[in-house]
Amino acid sequence: DRVPFDQRLADFQSLHNRGQIKELRAYFTKNAMIQSPLTPRGASSEKYLQALAAEPYNLAFSRTEVVYSLPRRAATHSDVVASAAGRFNLKERVTVDWRVEDGYWRIARILYSDWSPIVGTWRHSGMNREGSIELRVLPDGSYLVFLAEDPSAPAFRGSYRLEGNKIIFVDTSSSDPQKLQSAEGSYLFVRTATGVDLRRVQDENTWRSERFEGVWSAAR
Image (cartoon, rainbow, N blue to C red; front, side):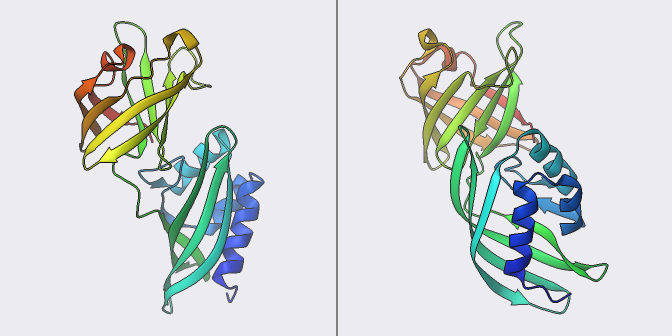
């Protein structure tokens, strides 16, 4: 198997962007762990492909460099653009770990090392009987909030900034304009074994302040 890694990533990119899920399975080792905008905390290749089938997005690799190459192990660095209209448009540096399995080079891990621990998809219960809330903190400085009554479209979009282990939220749009409040809200975040604990410092957004504090479980 002598296909160069940059060509292998180009082939992977083509299948990925066409949604060829079955063919993509052959590119991963059996125990591969994939970090991505859909699985920001890392997931098995099967969970990643399930998420990709549900929420397709495009990848574009460039400037691939070999970090090291041994007879059965290798690693590459690449620039990558991950984009989905209306959801995210990320430009990142990514590490791909490769292993030889069944005579072929396959992807053992995809890692975006610069992402904060708060980046991820988190869920917890809303007030009373309103159902669960899903918070997607994206690595590009934006976030999305989905509510149980309409999980297909975000109820809120916003931007955030980080100050150590403090995150400051600002809503920028809402599916219901009457619920949009532009006040900032700051929370300390602590990673737990299964998710993240948000502890309110100050938040003048009443909708958010009544719902965001507490333990959120990792959704992916």
